[in-house]
Length: 366
Image (spheres, rainbow, N blue to C red):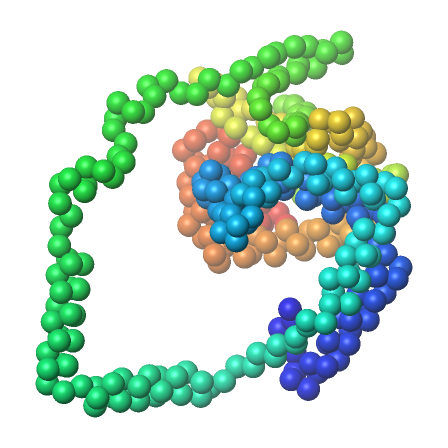
C-alpha cells in the first residue's frame, strides 16, 4: 500500500507494481538478498520474540488461525520441515519465489485496486444517517413498544452493574503470595579461560538452536574523560562505517545472511561494593549454532579491520546521532533530567553514562 498518492496517479502506481512483479518473476532476486530474508525469517520463527505480549498466548492465537477453519492447529508451529524444504529448493537453484509471484500474483485473476480518499463530509453524513435511522425506529414504536424498550434497557443496566455472586467469583483463578517462589530463578553458569587468558562465561539454556554471544573489551585505562562523549559514536561507527574488506552496505548484508543481528555498544555499570565502575565495549550478536564461526569472524572483522576513511559517512553518523539526541530532548526530557541527577548522586558510573548519552553527550555532538 502507498499513501499520499494523487487519485489521478492510481493507474500509474498499479502499472509500476505490476511491472516490478513481472521483472522479479523474470529475473529473480539477488542470491544474498534471498539468503538474508530466509535467515531473518528463521530467527523470527525460532525466537518467537513477542515483546511484552505473553508468548503462550501468542502461540495459541497462531494455532487458532488454522484451527478455526478446520485446519491443523499445529501447522503454524511446526515450521522446521517446511523451512528446510525451502532452503533445499533454493540451494538447488529452483526459482521458488519467482514461481510464487507468477502463480499467486501475476496469473491470479482475483485482483483489486482500492483507492481510499479522505472526506470532510463523510463523518457528518454517517452521523446524519444514524440519526435518521434512529428517528425512523422511534417513529415506528407505539407506547407499548417504548415501554418494552425502556424495560429492556433497565434490565441490561441492572445486569451490568450487579455484583457477581461469590460462587462465580470463586471460579476466577487468582495468584496468592504462597504461589510465588521465594527464591529467584537460577541461571546455570559455566566459567572457563581460553589459552590467551580471556574469560568465557557460558549459560547453557534452551534457546531453540540460537546462540547469543557478547564479546566484551575492557575500557579501563584506555579512555579519557574527554573521550567519553565520543564512545557511543565510535561504537556505532564500528558497524556503520564498514571495514577494510567491505563497505557498510556489504557488511550489513553479510550480517543479515549469517546472523540474526550484530552490533556494538558501550556499557558502564556500577560495581557491587566498589566505586570503580565496570566499563566495556561490547560486540553483541546472535546466530544459529551452526553459524557461530561466521558470527565470530564478523566480530573479528569489525573489531580489527574497521574503516574510518569516509569522512562523509562519518559526518552522516554524527548528524543522525545529533538528530536523535535532539528528538529525545523533546520527547523524553524527563529522562535527560534523570540522567543528569544520576550523574550527581550515583557515582562514577552515573557520571560517565551522562557524559555519553545525556545532555553532556549532546553538547559534545554540537
